[in-house]
Each structure stands twice: as structure tokens, then as C-alpha cells.
Image: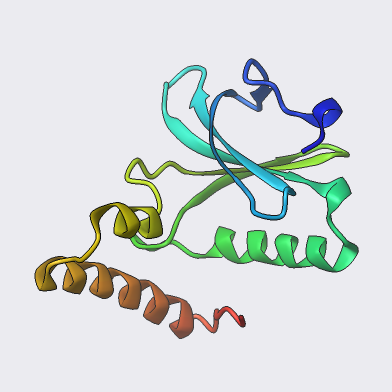
Length: 140
């Protein structure tokens, strides 16, 4: 995100105060920050998507993904709690998962035990099966 369009840490999105950056999108169109609900203290991940950097086609895909995420609820699928928007940004209020990305875990840990690999595999297959049973699939 360009310097003039950065989202500050002291900013609020709805009832959520934005805090530290958790990650950045590879294409420079999104940023993920920790959000804390100002009353309950619940932590969330706030994905901030810069609309100005998206083509109309990509923006439509993002909006379709949001619509799908609102419909699904599964323990192994990241939850979408709410969406806020303004002219410049979409703010997706997402479930905060403290463990981080599976890829990063695998890089850090290296080889997994069979038991641990089986546990991750079952969770992934459960999520994929759930999505497919609801006619949701990702075309790469």
C-alpha cells in the first residue's frame, strides 16, 4: 500500500481498534492487522483490501468470496464475522487464529510425525469435503 493510503494502527474499523500488522498480501493489494473489539476485547484479524489497486474482475472475485464466506461455518474454515467498506478499502473482520499459517509452521518445524501429518490432513480434508458438499471449490 502506498504511503499516503496506509491504514494507521490507531484507527478503528467499526468497533475494532487496529493494532499490529499480521501479514501482507503478495500483490500489495491487501494487509492483515490485528483488531481488538473495543468493548469485549475479542481479537480478530482485519484483512484490509485496497479497492483502488484491484481490477474490476478481481474485485468481483473478492466480493464473490465474501458472499461465500458469509454462508459457510465449519471448524476448519476461517470464519468471516463482518465486512466494512469505504471508497478506498474493504475491511474483512475474520476469525483470529493464533497459530499462524500452516506453511510457516511446516517451514519452521520441518518434517512432521505421521501422527501430526495425519491430524492436519484430516482437518484439511474435512474442510474441503464440507466446501465441496456445498458446491464450493477453488479453481487454481
